[in-house]
Figure (tube, rainbow, N blue to C red):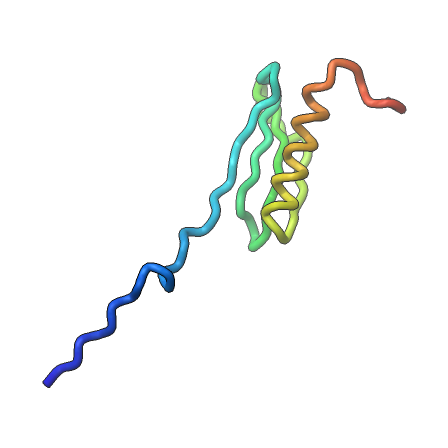
Length: 85
């Protein structure tokens, strides 16, 4: 007699992997993207007008990458430059 494989209950099923996000600044001139790359989370800032990459940073944890993306958006939305620029 063949044995049936046990049914997985919903608690043991794997959740889908967290996805990245894309955010634009208020003026829609820059785009900040958080995406999984090279087994790390990459934060990439690009110019919308010409597609140029302004900067890129890598983090091992997603929450750190999202926090840095929020920092970049906050800086890009400033009306005056930060002190020392």
